[in-house]
Image (tube, rainbow, N blue to C red; front, top):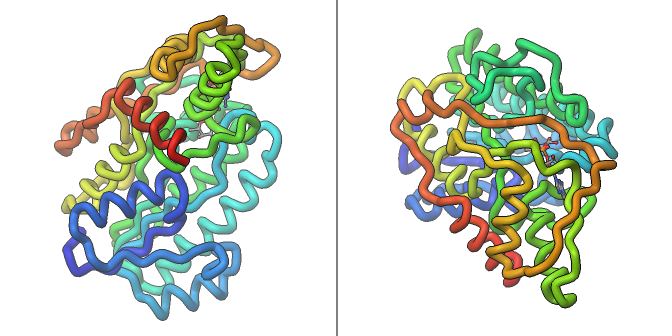
Length: 308
Ligand code: GFB
């Protein structure tokens, strides 16, 4: 259970989720936050990771470092998504165990659940079916990390657990139109189309898939909340428990950005999961609910995009 003097290593502190976690820990007054840039600590280098962990001896590792991307990136770079994630997970999770780090928060994703699964998705759905083909390599890598944490928890009684967030967005997001997730891609597309005189915007797929979106600072708040709990379950879905269609999302982003024009759909692009909505009843029973509405979150993310 997190205490004020704990030394907390946040891996991936510059990313969308990692930077939100650092902001949240700082806002809540935790003084001993440890970070390393990729140049300072290459997570692909097992000896360097072992050396760092045995020297720094953190009380916590929060693993926000990962090779991540949207449906396009996963389809284009499948080997990178499984290869890099398996390596850094094995180095950091197993390295933390070897260095006797007592607490570890690993980050999964709702996209590692089976494609065919009850909606909203309960934690018990994991490994009950085949993954979504557009991100199967990434899903297998993330499942491996989750199971490694569960096994260390079982065999060595360490407080290692996995948070399962939905689609995350917020400050410091990736706006590259080929590799990003849908929400930042739409912010950029509608913004640029507005500046170009409200030209038409083309979205991918049919617009009918449903997705759950959580603002990054809310995810970070949930993670720090769970770190502070005694006996946190080994796997907890994080989210709002509500999803919208991509078409509804596009219309919401269009409204927030102030674009007035046509929206078209490129159905040559994949839809991915028909729906991905987390069952958050366990999280809610632990006493946490999100603070940021989707419209407010998109407005804050758009402001961050304009300021970047
Ligand atoms: O966010 P996204 O790339 O990933 O796509 P997933 C979500 C939905 O938005 C898909 C549609 O149905 C896309 O076809 N979409 C519409 C767009 N317009 C766009 C666009 O301009 N860009 C993008 N990217 N999508 C990811 C997994 O699945 O979920 C990752 O592949 C990760 O591994 C992430 O776990 C959370 O939600 O389909």
